[in-house]
Length: 420
Image 1 (cartoon, one colour):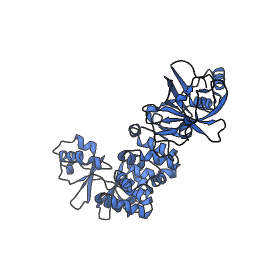
Image 2 (image 1 turned 60 degrees about the vertical axis):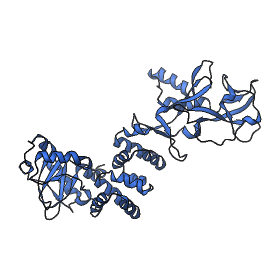
Image 3 (image 1 turned 135 degrees about the horizontal axis):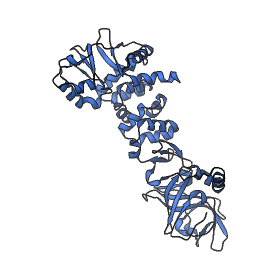
Image 4 (image 1 turned 30 degrees about the horizontal axis):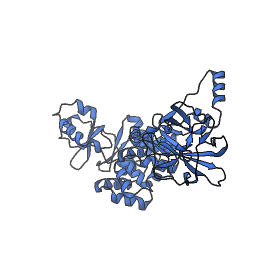
């Protein structure tokens, strides 16, 4: 490690670890094992202690950072007395940086992927050491193993290429509270801004403990959207160990078909507990879907869709959509039904928008509706989607009463694994 005399200088943890600690006479008195930082000093934590192995001591001890002065290739310590040493028991807000951060995984929200922390960068100013960046790049890894300069020489000489630094500012990073889980996470608001599919990819790349930590840091709505994009086996692993009340809040925000699929995969007792905690009307709709085999039309459909009487006008239908669209799984098609909910016809939202407000739905609807029965298998349903080029198919019983709607996305989730 090289420490300069300028008032401000950048240092790396990899160049501090393992360095000698000497006294003012140049005699080695110890070796650096780790640094302790206080995370309550925001936005950039301050290094407060050095964990070191001291001469004539069989175990590591902590020594305050302010006990050290500038040196060239090592840390130089001022006069130390016995009372200056502290047992290596961390206080609230403190972490060991090497142990807690190096080689841990971090969510890179810009690249929508998991990165590994290869090094830490500090700013030394006014004799204080502030943690300012985590290094997730290849250069940081080469620095760790002592090959940074030789790698630069080879790349520049052979390919005229220079490795760039890849830093993530600490202000975008927050530690999780549990020492057994993921040590780092990007601030929650940045996670919430990511597309749920990207978040699902990130969660799937993590091990079970780390993915639980990231998932539980999300707000309810984002968690539900992300869960819908996640592999079913991982959905189960995320939900089965959650408190019932928390799990029910998230599942209530999911589409009905997705919620039914997830509950169908959970252990029976857990699923029943969650259903009892859910709002009654949502729970009843989900139970109705659970009554059908998963890969039939009844198991693939959602019961959250728009249907209207034929006497409704376009204007009335639009007003209703404005009020209810947020709770619907699918709104591109509107279905026209009689008083007993027999399917009479359908029209698209586009057709509704361009129609005169006073026009009745009966005069707008297309009576040539492609539908399937509750027990129709996924292969036949897929044929209908391909043949007619539609985005959703209504599901009816033997009397032509509409029971639900199959969205193409739900079918794709069932057949896609077979296409790989």
